[in-house]
Amino acid sequence: MLRSDAICELESTFVPCEFRVKWADGGWEIHQARALRRRVFCEEQQVFEGDDLDALDTQAQTLVAVSALGGMPDEVVGTVRIHAAEDGLWWGSRLAVHPAYRKHGHLGATLIRLAVCSAHARGCRLFLAHVQSQNVPLFEKLHWTALRAETLHGRPHHLMQADLASYPPCHDPLTGFVTGPRRVA
Image 1 (cartoon, rainbow, N blue to C red):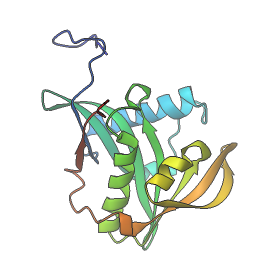
Image 2: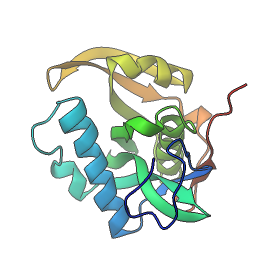
Image 3: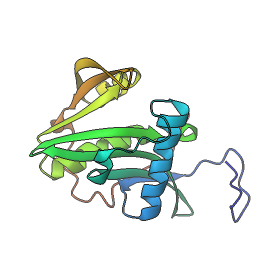
């Protein structure tokens, strides 16, 4: 993707070689994460009108997948938020990956992994999420169990639970994980 503010001209098919998935620690990361959520949930999926912000955003921790150019952070291409609802019970929500990056670097899976692993390090004993039904197979591959079907925002979802035994605690979520583009054989 050639950006109008790019210092050098990159091929239109250029894909960053790595992505860092981590807890957001800068205002620009949160700003871009919220813009990405609006793009996915308001414009693309039309789940919400105008904005998807809610009361949980004041207490939730935002996680981001940041592309890197020349080793430097470039843009937020994925996001999810997590929060503790009560002692030991954590929730994940608003998982979004930019459409241009959905086939690169396992970003959704890596965001899910950091979400659960970092909550696990902070005392999580039960991690839940309301997952859009079309995404249930991805979560099942990542060791989640569907507990029941539900309808949220007029759309089919499943209440799902992560198998914490598959998610070792991550005590350094600001560093997070690095992932790269998928290799095509």
